[in-house]
Length: 214
Image 1: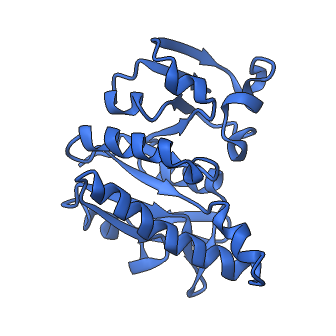
Image 2 (image 1 turned 45 degrees about the horizontal axis):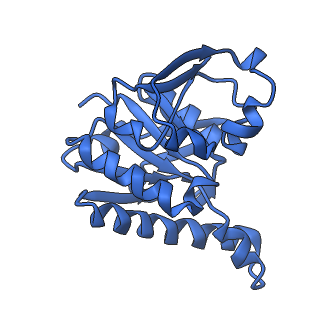
Image 3 (image 1 turned 90 degrees about the horizontal axis):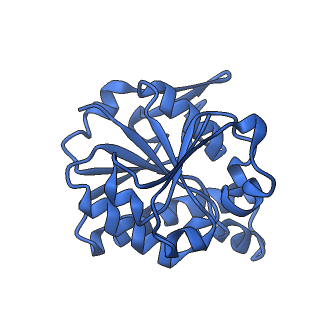
């Protein structure tokens, strides 16, 4: 089954329950899996650090907890989902500068309607956190350049459901666009993406409100 998109749940959106509910409803409307959903850590990591945990331990725990919570959220919308971390079952490994996807292990999950993968990969026998932009780019390349879907952080984009299709360049983004619209982690991504909204995600692949950035 070809993977057509990689939906990225970024750091900021993972704390937005309204967004996550809208995203889950859209995912439910897509039916049989056409892509995968990925995530990194969230502000929960910082809250754990404030309790005295070391950052690496806090991030590991936060991402594991988050993966379970997202699976539960999707289940509430009737979406069967397997939540998995990149380091599990030899799925994703980092060797040197390369992040490698085990296609055989990945294909073994194809009977699952939806797959949720965290950016904790295997490195020297232990989990390693990979920043979400690097993880997104690598997984896209491993999946035949599947489209990377980012979601606007501008709340007006979710409210004003007007059809908008535009094409931008990373080298010449409009003034203020990155600050108001792009997830902070991806401001200097410099890799092809499609920026849309949680609501419009239900229309994939015929997105009505989409900005292509190349």
